[in-house]
Amino acid sequence: MQILKLKETVTFMGYRKVAMVFSILLMLASVASLAINKLNFGLDFTGGVKVEVGFEQAADLTKVRAVLDSNGYDDAIVQLFGTSRDVVIRLAQRPDVKAELLGNNIVDALKDGMGVSVDMRRIEFVGASVGEELTEQGGLAMLTALICILVYVAFRFEWRFALGSVFALFHDVLLTLGLFSVLGLEFDLTVLAAVLAVIGYSLNDTIVVSDRIRENFRKVREGGPEEIINISLTQTLSRTFITSITTLLVLLALFFKGGALIHGFATALLFGVFIGTYSSIYVASSIALALGISKEDLIPEVIEKEGADQEQMMP
Image (cartoon, rainbow, N blue to C red; front, side):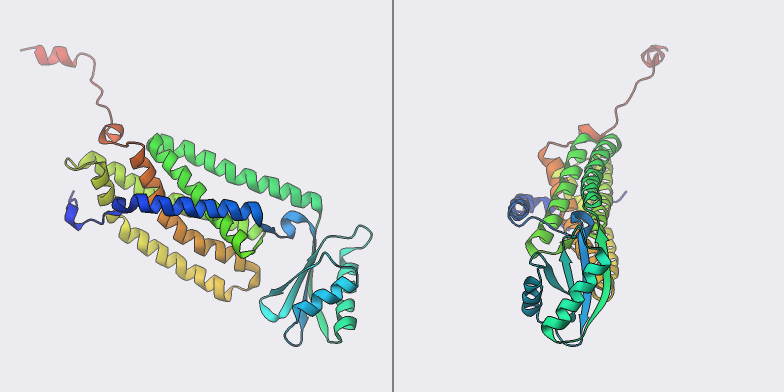
């Protein structure tokens, strides 16, 4: 096998300390935002009613909120939805009012209060108990995925790679949640599905890198662990670049042309592709190197057959 010379490799690990400091700062910022701003959970998790209405002209959100406040809907959350003429209104379910009737009351209130034509596009209702169950099951799904990945990578490669892979996935999930918290984007079931897809994408990239590192540890006779990891990352760089570009092309199409319903899904995956590629190089590999990965850990033990010594001693 032809191995790249050291001068032809990219010294990824030479920047690992800077990258780790950068990652830690981003993770701390994400934790701070999640603690202060929290996530803007959608109706899938919180329960309630979501009403989408359309105006003939650009909607004045300040006036829409004032009209709703004056009609007793002071808990309503008003946001633009796709265009400046489309508005989504979210509010808690009234126990004594059906969802359809509540939507009609909101539309009538907007028509009377603003004196313009308002069309109701869609109404959604999710019960509070269903929302709580989805929140719990979604968290358990991510936790189960991380535990299964830890076990698989430890069995498939080595425990240092397993810890690096799981920490990289935790890093990706935390930063993705932090992005949604900082920007105040709605976090619903489609975004949760995107977060789980980010875990799968990042893991796939990490497995490819780990497999090449293990292979080079067994075949490269010269060079320390840092040099071998640099060689391995350089060899997988073209594959990583091609995979990321083709994935991004699809996600960009979904982001710009997919419509508002999957906007959050595309946003999470777009960010996840970037951060997943970064973590495969600078988080998973750096942690394995920091934990002292070496050739002895990856070279399989040679098991001597019983009686081999006696056979060699026979004339």
